[in-house]
Length: 135
Length: 135
DNA sequence: AGATAGAGTCTCATATTGAGACCTATAACT
DNA sequence: AGTTATAGGTCTCAATATGAGACTCTATCT
Image 1 (cartoon, rainbow over the protein chains, first blue to last red):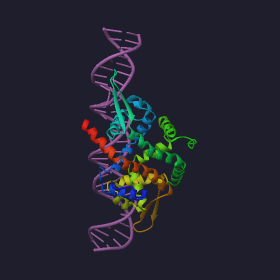
Image 2 (image 1 turned 60 degrees about the vertical axis):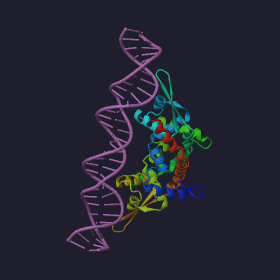
Image 3 (image 1 turned 45 degrees about the vertical axis):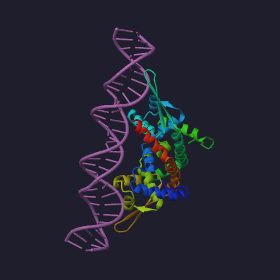
């Protein structure tokens, strides 16, 4: 992506929108958003931020994700270099997942999103109450 | 949510994880993430950040969103107080959508995510190439 | 008179996800 | 010896979510 260093965030947002509209499928931002859009991605990253964990442990920690989606989410994250997969040759074999430095680094912007949500939780709640009230 | 002012971001992340695990469905963060997880939400917010726009204009600007999902996304955003809906009594009537201050403010953390994506796009691309190479 | 526009809604086809059975091998329990 | 449990998945079938596109109503435009 071209020099973003001299642009304001709004400018970059605008540029981003244009890329989306252009339908560039290999646009990195669209890619990330689709990723976050998988919903489990974020949860898995947060869980792994606590400690490296094995497959079933992750499953127990995130009770409402199905094995199917857990597998898929982990594969996607591995593929994108955010999670590392290590197989231990025990019987039965165990597999440990951990965050790579790249995976760690994405926790920061995700954290910003979470902080925003906490900060404005009350505003949103109020908006909903009002919205329902009007029907 | 309890005092977050004295906690580190990691602490907050941990707390967040616990809330998720507890399955609190009305947890504001889970709510926001599910929202972002709708994928169109982010695109619509970005589009509206350029200018208030009417329904069909939004549809043309985001060619790959269906009317169905556009309607639903806008309703959700309206419900959460991030987007305002104004009906003009023209013939045929037109409807303008715009960001509320709350909607504007969420663009900042979303922008942080986008900046991260641009910054690490090359890392991710490289990771993918390697992943494919190994099969 | 017929086409067009705006903002949706409705239905049906398709895609994504969830629930849970099943697989392999080994080790511990009875 | 036979049963059961465990780890990390995969596979199938059912439920849910999304996309594509027809249809609505009225007032201008051609």
